[in-house]
Image (cartoon, rainbow, N blue to C red; front, side, top):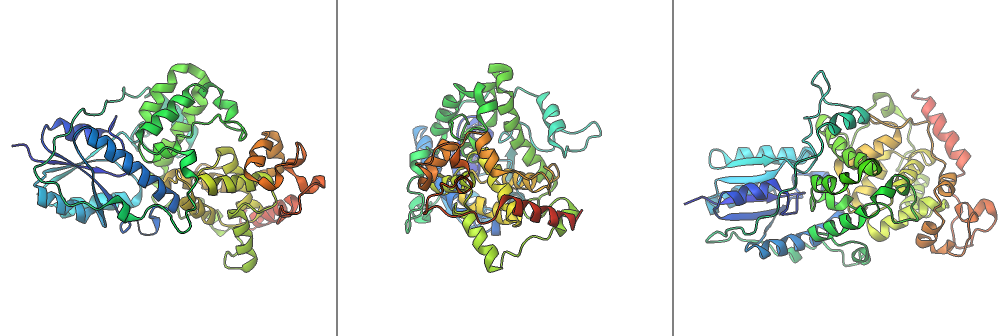
Length: 464
């Protein structure tokens, strides 16, 4: 009799084009799908609040998909290696199928699991969460790329990816299911207060939601090159949380869009940026907590423990800086768990350069509040803006949020997310204080653009 196989789900919550699912199903024997909420192995990198909201909804969807093919999802909470070893012992399973993950804590979990399994069962890791596995796209000398542009050019030569593999039509069940937690008992959804109350108006977590988003974006993907910079327009894919949680494979996205030709190349480059970020943390696992450029580690950031700095940081977090485009982005983030990409760059630059607050403070805020919070993408993007990364913008290139707002026609975006400014017309809405039409209820600027710029450049001179 074929021994049971375990599918260990992590950030790969789908049945279609999921190599671990396909391998377990192909065995023909009983299959035990498992998800473990492991807050112990990641330590300070446990999922933030917004990600936990998404996880709850995504696991509900995965459970429904599994039931449709005659199976179910076993839920456990605790150290993944320990629970999986126990399930192997109780079920007699001889293989655990899982997708490769490259965050340092998941690498640790894989090692701990292999050690605890001993000779009793095998952990088999599969590829497919990225277009190509990190480390496989290398220079002529056989070393990993550090800079994005040559990485993109090299990876592009391997595209398109293989056609996606369909979900299995059925999974055989074991005679006895292991014990399972109740999803509701994990209390992943906020209640007091329910700050995620409006998230459901903006998102449909799960594989079906991912497919719907992809189909909707496919009709406008040719406009992405320009549209990605226009926060008032709905011209971005909004696929980032679906890709992060693995509800859709990047190969599926690539193959759906690439047929539109050169018009979608800008978006495909963004999809490859996700691979590039994994390539970075594969080389530098601590990238999320340490500036890559050694000289930039000495940059004299303002002390976050100082009351005035705390006040500035809180104003930024809650969209009360007096800079409409920044405030709109931060309020969109709070209301929806997401922020338009162009506005993310503006908001990040404002924190780092206008307020001279360490990029890691912003990265941690995004980690807690983004539904697409991804260790690789988040840290690579923050270090790009801060000028501290392996491939990054120069620190002295300081975004001017007021002119960026006008350049990219953000008036309607601001009116949507900053109700105090709903009745301010263009072009005054981009800088109502300077225009003399700032409503009394909207905060004054916490720092002038020139003052913030000069302070940032002065700090840079100390490390230059």
